[in-house]
Structure formats: C-alpha cells, structure tokens
Image (tube, rainbow, N blue to C red; front, side):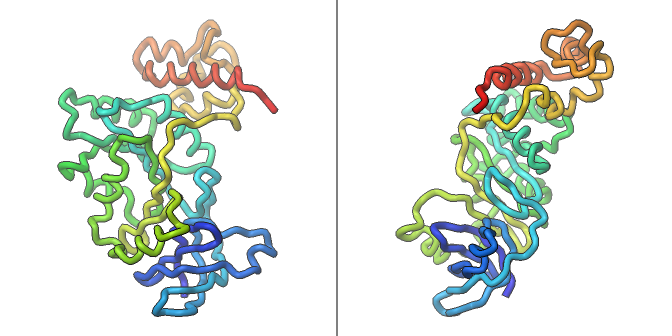
Length: 291
C-alpha cells in the first residue's frame, strides 16, 4: 500500500493511506543505507494489523524536494502567516523567513490574517509591498471566513509548509482550512498524541486528497548564519532591476556613492521598510562570528 508520512516521533512513523493513519516502524534497511524517513515522504508500506492500524514502511519513494528547516520531504511551497494587527507584523522576521525559504528554493505565499480587525486598511498596503517584490500575497480573516476559499485554491494539489510567530492565528487558520472534516481525526489525534507522543512536532494534515499542509512549531527568531553578507542582496528580488544603476559592481547598497538601490528607495520604487530590514540583516551578517 502507498501512503504519506504525516508525523514521525521516537522511531514511530504515522502514514496516511486510503483515509486511515497507520502507526509504522521503518525496516532496518533504511538504517543500513543511512536514510531516514521524513515527514512528507511518500512510502510503500505493509499492513501488519488492519484492525489495530499497524504497519511497516517497506520503501521510501523518490523525493522531489527536501527541506533542512523544517526537516521535511516533498514540500511544494511555504505559507507564512502574520497578523495585520494584534500583534503588529514583525517584518524583519518575515524577511528572514523569506530568505530561508529562498535558500531552499521553496516558493512562498504571504498570508496576512485578522482582516476583520483591519480598520485602517493596512493589510492592503502590506500586500502591495510584498507583491511588488514578486511574492504571492493574500489577506484573510479566520473569524469571518474572508479569503479562505481563495487561500484553499492556492494550496490545492500541493504540500505546503505553514509557519508563523505566536499570536497571529495560525492554529485557527489551520483549523479553518481543514473544515473540521479532514481525516475525522478524533481517533487519529488520540493515537498520535498519546503517552510518549505529546511533544510538539511537525505534522502533515490532509485538507483533501493530494493537498496537505505541514503545521510546524512556531518560531520567534531566525538566524542567517549560513549566509555571507555579500550574498544578501540577491535575496531581495526588487533590488535586481536597480543594481545596474550602481557605480560599483558588487555594491553593498549601504554606503557607496551612486547606488541605484538607495536611489530607488528615495524615489519610493523600493520599500523603505524592506531596505531598512536589509541594512539590519547586512550588519548582522557583517558582525557574526565564524567558528
């Protein structure tokens, strides 16, 4: 039987196949080959006990992608969730996440939640900033249901890793996407969360056949310690068109004379907020210690 690993804890792997979640062990052949099953892996499995929903993973199928952070296979895109208000979005953290996903060649959708509280219309401004940089953006309200159908369309047929800081309504949005019908999961939840399985781990949730979301533990900070300061500008796609106006090749866009990027910031072509984040991250990379 073919299925997909939706969770892995302490040597147990939970495989979703034909509407059922099987608790599986991986055969020793994986250890011999130095291959470790990951959440998101497509597998061939043997059912050992259909009534108790127990199985063995027999084969890992080829991966089309593999992320390091979070450690997961076969992700197609990332959905990064921030609230419009309460709390105000931390754009420095958002930019860090976008860079991290770019490093792993994962396209991003930026979702601004709590549209129902957006009396000032800030969400439209935030969307415009990032849309001009080439990112897919959407504003939603989990409370009112606004934008949820459009978001489901963006997720359809793909495996999407979902992440965001605490307080932005990520759990509510994940629940909203499920429509409370997915894998009807009273029994599944009890199985996965019982006893030794209470630690918070990444988990794949089936929205519908072929459409999964990967709920990852919340993050509050992201380091950029695998990046050189000279590489940072390449992760700001809006800089590319303006760099031809820089006097010097390899311009850092910080203090050089005649800088097309800084001119574009003054003209409003490039978001000042994005540029200021770039300067902060550049300084962080400049000062980071190497070990």
